[in-house]
Image (tube, rainbow, N blue to C red):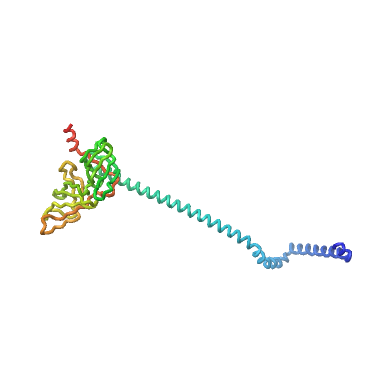
Length: 287
């Protein structure tokens, strides 16, 4: 077809060559003028402004894909960062709980050390291994036994006061009863005036009853009750409880008196056993 078209119009080729040559000269002239005097800046800016929407339309799919990829990547990175931060928060909280527990234990041991300095008798810190599950029996098991010198009737204290007494000493462990047990009673005296009476356990960790005081007994709310030293079980002068209620009924012979133990009997992990001088002398005499 091209051959036939050339045969029909043989003068077309020279005409195209002349046009191309003219366009080449025009281009060189425009380049020269633009280079020297920047006459085509306005034209170039107009063409650029006209073409800009087309550029936006052409680049839109690519830009959208890049934006979607960045968004997906950012979301994944945020989720990963969020998961990492949550794990760090949980780890920090766990460490903080452990530090809080260690701080509380350190405070308890410091209190024990301070109490030991105040105690004249020989004492030893022991750990509570178990607590009786029966809510009506306030019994505990200690991690020391007769092989370490523990004996039945040995007094138990902590940094705040009297806790209880050893009931049975096995070779490696010991069973003890708390002063709050309903079956326990100890002889106490009012630290203010020396008035003596019995303090009975009630089955509640925070209450002791003093039922044997007459209405005219000199006892007041806030009085400190300490061990009397009589009976041979508890050495004298150790805090036991603080009187919190005194109710006097005229037609009754005895007052209703209750006291709160100085020691938190339901919040203990470590306690102290007392080897009193009185017991050592008795053991020496028995030998």
